[in-house]
Length: 228
Image (cartoon, rainbow, N blue to C red):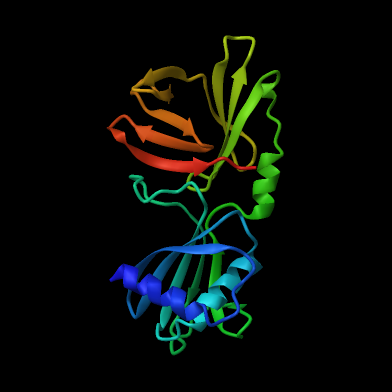
């Protein structure tokens, strides 16, 4: 049924002018008097771009009194124990019910609510520009913004210490939350960065950082794509 709903949405929206910003409907879930859609976008696009995408979807989804669109960034996976992390949410509500949250007008003059759940593009840019003194002399391997924990993690390598890795996590104010020199082990060809005495670990593959809990060793908990 979900596949049919997504297929119908794709066919219907083909009749309207599609936004220039690429997007993909990943999943649909029925909610009261409507539907919730998970929509993947390729980057931290602006509020205006997401509202335009919402307007495009809404224009051919008028049969739903309630339409919620959760925007998802690349790197997420439904296989993760913690599910996917929402970047932003746009929602159209029943027009017969007054909602004080409906303060944004789309291009068709329909009102909706909008909220950044994760970091805005501007805040993300600021975090990525940080240059922590704790990593001086080390080579940055990757930067990973985690909208779920509201932090950014730097992974760096020290060429002068047998390529020892360091993971430095900062909060939104740039304050160090944790600093770890993980133990690296390779199991069945998988390179793991063990980050706790309990055995919690991370893997880094194809620019995606995946976290695993020691309580469910083989099931990924959360994953994040490298930020640029």
